[in-house]
Length: 252
Image 1 (tube, helix red, strand yellow):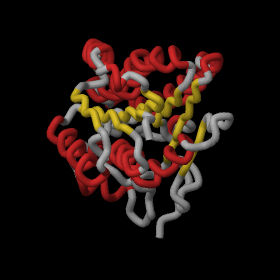
Image 2 (tube, rainbow, N blue to C red):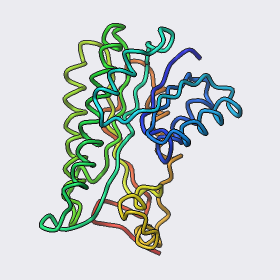
Image 3 (cartoon, rainbow, N blue to C red):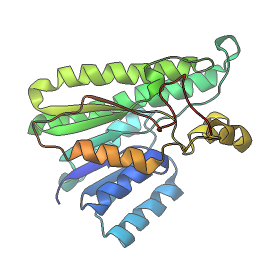
């Protein structure tokens, strides 16, 4: 398999699981992340256990200069990126809008929206030049409906959904697929980050729910990526069986 997959935010959660499934199936991997130790660990694991060809790039998607420098300096044999998975993202804080922390808002906006845009802007021309490619944007069901205390996070994921539609339209003439993946409750580091390390609050989010795992999202991404060339899943919402919407879940 000579196809190249680039995964941002590959050091944990959805990103790590997605890198693993593509490596398992013989794809070449470009993995990116801010945490160099974790990135190096994943690189070694994919090479040693999956015999994968891996290029690890340590940079912050929030920094456009870093993004452009790294993508422009890609070795020639790694430039033909077939699949871009814009996974880097986070939720920070959970307060009413009148009590929110501006630093939290900026982290979410800079990562979830601007970071996705910076990476797409750098990679999409490589796909356009070859008239081929597939871009995955990891959104959320929080982008479909806002909920109390979700305000800015919900807004960023609504932006991801809109951007995905816009990208699909703009890149239609270039034969490039765009897929928005919108998961519901998924048990990763997400809530630990949101509650700034408070594991008790984080655990309570999933209490009584058999939540989605990183592997579930990875399997769906892989499924969409391996459909026939004439098929494109534009928008895919997925939840645990015990969750019907942002507002409806059944806890055992």
